[in-house]
Image (cartoon, rainbow, N blue to C red; front, side, top):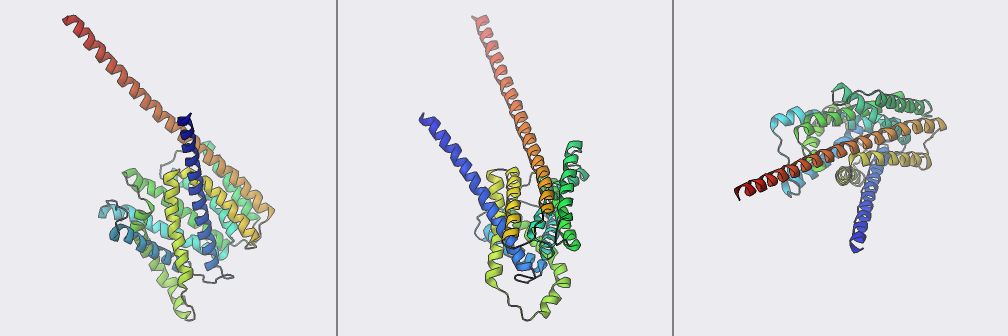
Length: 350
């Protein structure tokens, strides 16, 4: 009875911890999105410089990652050769820079709620790019689901009260680059047995990302900032904003490492609904019935996609257990046959 009670307590503790990791990630992701919107929106803090904001984030994260790895040795660096860095990390850093630049730029033109609706296209982009790079197999059922998600997002866009074509272009570009980055991580790093936690990932990728952002910043935003002599850098605003962005990277590692990437996908849907509700009730963004209907349709498609992924994962784990069980049974049978053979040999000698 005591053993059963301790087992139940262990399960409850594990469930509570999982919910805690989910809650921390949702809170930090929610905070970073709303904070970035506050800084970049012309009607709020009015600092519409997305490249500069992303550079501040990357510089802050690079510094903390360097201190954690090289100065305080809190995290062991992953061994990466110069060739692997140039051929794998640099392209991923470039894609990350483009994704962050475009996604932050979209906050200047679009509402928080509509951006979350457009982000529902991420599974469509990842699946499509995975097919192009031959990392995913084409399945009619999955493609039909991707089409339903796209139709739902299209309806939400049609019902958007403050539709801005340039903002939509920026956000769709961010989704495309982020999806490509995720596929490239799988192709260039994971397939080679290299896994990076958020600290080592920032240690290697953030400086590269910073360099790629610095080039357009010189030509696009630096001349404007140079003329804006009345601007005073607020260390509290940008410091806490950067700290939230860094903490979000750690929360991603905590959530995926202690639960799964699938859990983060499901939690992401909950976060999107919370952001839509916040955008409508607090920021006073207009959310139309057609918006909600379209996103609801896309939400069902994303939910079905996550369910399919979960079933595939369970089937794969079941197959692995069956194979291990078969190997174990074969080994025991072999040992038994050897034992019987030795017994027969002993009888013959007697």
